[in-house]
Amino acid sequence: MNNRLLPVLRHRLFWPALALVALLIVDVVHTPGFLSVRMQDGHLYGGPIDILRYGAPLVLISVGMTLVIATGGIDLSVGAVVAIAGALACLRIGKMADQNALGGVLVAIALAIAVGAALGLWNGILVSRFHIQPIVATLILMVAGRGLAQLITQGQIITINSSPYHVIGGGFLATLPVPVLVAVAVTALVALLLRRTALGLLLESVGGNARASRLVGVRAGGLIVGVYVVCAVCAAVAGLMTSSNVSAADSNNAGLWIELDAILAVVLGGTALTGGRFHLGGTVLGALVIQTLTTTIYTIGVPPETTLLFKALVVIAVCLVQSPAFRAKVFRARRGRRRVPATAADEPASIEPTGEAVHR
Image (cartoon, rainbow, N blue to C red; front, side, top):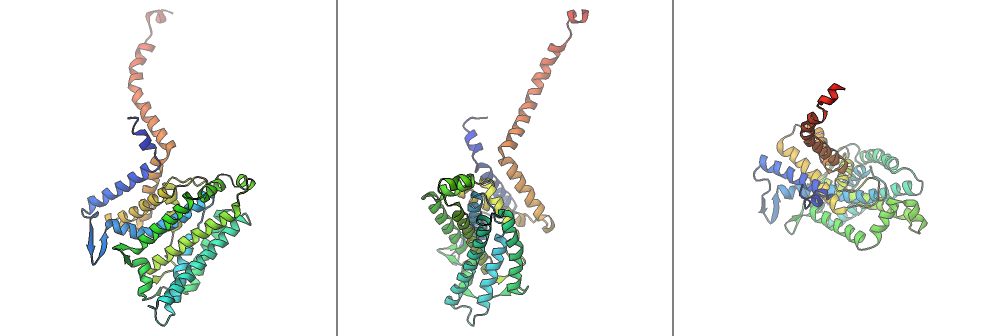
């Protein structure tokens, strides 16, 4: 193999990027005009725009999940927070005399985000103060939070008709969908704070060795609480986008299994679940791969009953080719098979009994 290609093949983002390109090729083969982008009524539409628009909530949650995983934790409650935020906002707006009143809509949005931050604070306190394992602490809210969302909506789907609220998930600004702009702004802000200050280094030190970080004076507890709050706020904003896009709050299905997609996006992006170093750019790419895969499933018409299985097979294939250990074993096996003919050609000459040996 050309030595100049080895650094490219070994780059952590090469295989996720290749998977993204492969999925887009499948979409183009099935739908020739999939990549075309058109302007209609001052707004951009098309396949790539749809991927970015519907992938924005997943990008937001994945960015928050990256920070949690960087500290050695995990947050399984983001799907429940999505449902709670959407339910609270829609319940508040639904009770307004004028659902198009901007002030009332802003209060509803602030209420949903504040409750999301409180839920993240709860997770952070359980993990950092009471030393409950992150997977257990967030699993509690994952189960209880879904029930809380159903209590808020009384088990019903709350529908609203609010133009200001619809802008969050279905609006456009400067020809681009608002969810895309929000996701880009939040990602850029988080990246700026983490890479232009010492905050990113501190998170990596806590994830690498929390005890050593405390010994050198890093306030690991405060940082852990902070990342859970940020993750929950990202999930709350994603919940606002989801409910706004359909003008309804469905506590049973909103954000269902999105925590698993977010974790997959983080892993595909090259961040290890053991904590330490993290890669925000890789996380965004991983989230786009997951969303493109979802779009491809619907585009090529995969039967609904096999959707999850098809998605799992593609994800495991990407994870395997991304694994250096898997590639090393596969390439070692191929090199071994290439050596077999030469060895077989040499073996007769080496093991053929000579006349002297036969005589003995």
